[in-house]
Length: 108
Image (cartoon, helix red, strand yellow):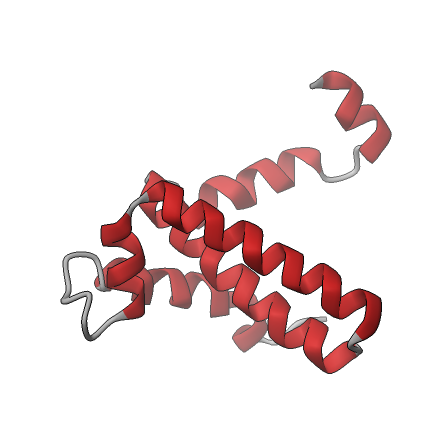
């Protein structure tokens, strides 16, 4: 079971990212990424995903945890850039709940 902190941390982080929209890119990394646009953010998501994979293959649990946090942050920035709210993703996951991953992939 997750604690309230666990359950809401992504929502709160998303709100912080959104609050940085239009801020000075020199003082906010989130503002810089948002001002750079989707292609730059997407490349960062890809880079962070690769770092998670590399950590999983050879660097151990602590590095996987750290790199996963980086990946989730950059994914949230991507959502913000694309106008996607976390509840849209949560709703999509809820729709898939109880469905075999194999069945779900066949439907796409």
